[in-house]
Amino acid sequence: MEISFATASDIPALCELLALLFSQEADFQPDEEAQRRGLMRILTNPDIGLILVAREDEKIVGMVNLLFTISTALGQRVALLEDFIVAPTHRGHGIGSQLLTKTIEIARLNDCHRITLLSDLSNEAAQRFYRKHRFSFSAMIPMRVLL
Image (cartoon, rainbow, N blue to C red):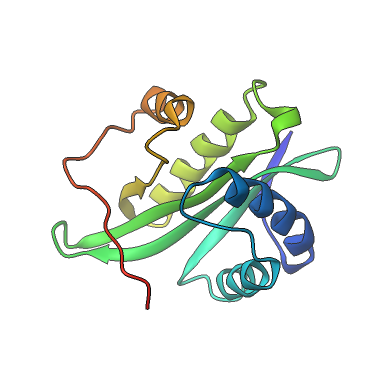
């Protein structure tokens, strides 16, 4: 298992994983063209964020997207953990834990002082996984408006 930074040539494989992720999530729908645009914006602008991938025998089997912002509450750089998925055929083998551990390490190296993520309310397995990695529930609740 190798964890590395994604490149533009990885976009087709990342789109496949995102299609799977967004078909599972209540709030999102797969849209390959939108996913390609978003991935390219992140990959070509490291100030926005970065994408890590897990590769097994050269095949991408997992990904995570880390986006950067500033918290005025902390007065520091923080990150949003987005689009975290491991292919169903590779789950249960520690790949997600390796990917998340590396993501946290990279966030620290990028001077981030907090990582925030969203999980579907009904996805108890994901919530157990994140709690195992020291994430905790926030008193805040997400709200959004589409523009």
